[in-house]
Image 1: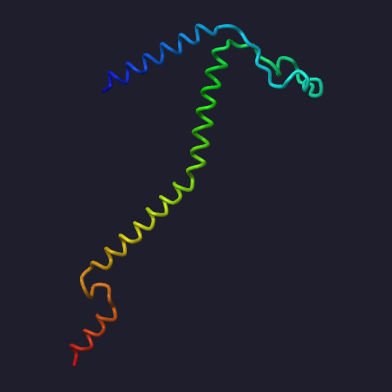
Image 2 (image 1 turned 30 degrees about the vertical axis):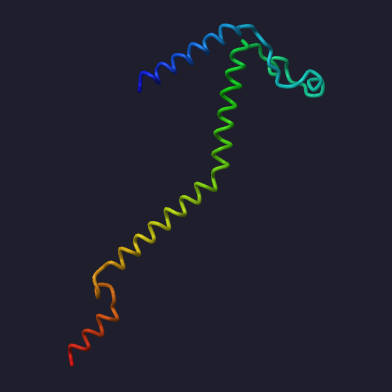
Length: 121
């Protein structure tokens, strides 16, 4: 099974390398559009950077996956909270059942007192 996993990872790696080699051209990525740069006085070096296209593509994929993970983690908060509540309730009930399974008279002070007073007569 490990060989299948390694084969799939090798295939994905070869595909990513092929995409990177096919998209080596430089592109300019800007922080703000040119019209907005007239109002905000950022230096040109801060506003734009020139990088190969495959870096922009891979960064977009990684950013999308990370945002998806965060979104799902936030969305599933109610399910995790509910599961934690069930775990607490299960532990509480287990302790209660264990306490109830103890032998008679071990924890019942009233019955112990009644048995002691009845034997002294």
